[in-house]
Image (cartoon, rainbow, N blue to C red):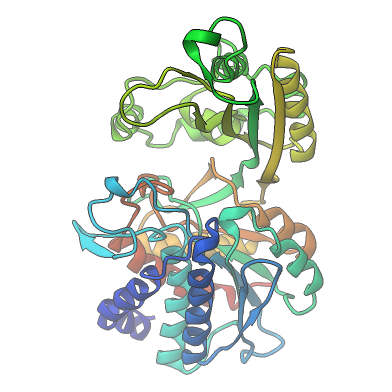
Length: 457
């Protein structure tokens, strides 16, 4: 591996410039105005794969395209790894909170700052650069490899499961590896073995047909903002428990071993609190902070709007109010079941004085993977070698909807090999990726491919 590591060190500056070029493309999948930019990012990746000696193509969907690339020159007796990632990114709002432009990647304090830096362009691109290193040093890879890089992860991976199901034979592999999650902490390499699922809703409360003068009508008709606020307040009790009937029916409780292992991790709760600027940490009673974010379900408002919010004053009684909210799910909760229960409860909470519209938007299933497969061991050893530290097993609080589909449709182990850090400001202004994490991520991916050469299943 000496030649490989030498190559990575000698080409580190260019690997950073290549990433910057990809980060400059504003591939915001949630905004139709950026549809052309999303395609531009897909085309850029396709050309980059081809430049490395891989066969690459765009697969058209009903939405944004999927980038597929492969190199199968290692032979039939050598394992095949499928690398999944996504090239789409979240909207950059609020723009005024960015120190530099969200699509003007800037290096400062040992970090590259840009939208998509860690979620997921930077982490995904580490695998691309690992392939480059093997090809440059040896003219080949130690394994066969396939890449599936989608452009719709931030909108629920709308078309990816259909693509995987239709291409099961083409995507045949011995393991799937995904780098789209954080390590436990700086210098603590980690294997993620569980992710929460997700349901996402929009609820609109409609009152009068039009906005009304609050002096002439206030007190005589229902105010949708007041009604909605009251409904939201009743979604949780004082102990942090979600009040939706049947919500906890299928929740898999944490094992004693998990709770003990998580308690032994070097978690700085006060540092966690101050790092996010919170006055205090709150949540479901009876559980620690790590247990709440890794192993317990949630129901949180993500945004609320209604009435007059401009400068000055306008004494208006609004016609409507809207809220968007998400629910993070844990094994063995079923998103469809939870969606039905939440919708029924929201409508029950609404008084007869308003009309309520519930829109189900997108979601994904929670997942647990076996942390002891040979493929996971190969990744754990690669991370341990690069960081010179034992890689720990953790769960993640976020969601990657396609993980369950990969596991079930391809029937192979999934390796969740996070390369970022918890404070990378995913989905927030000034998203960043530590340069050390990027470079060590490339090295770890390269070593993982080496380790996989002797793995079956």
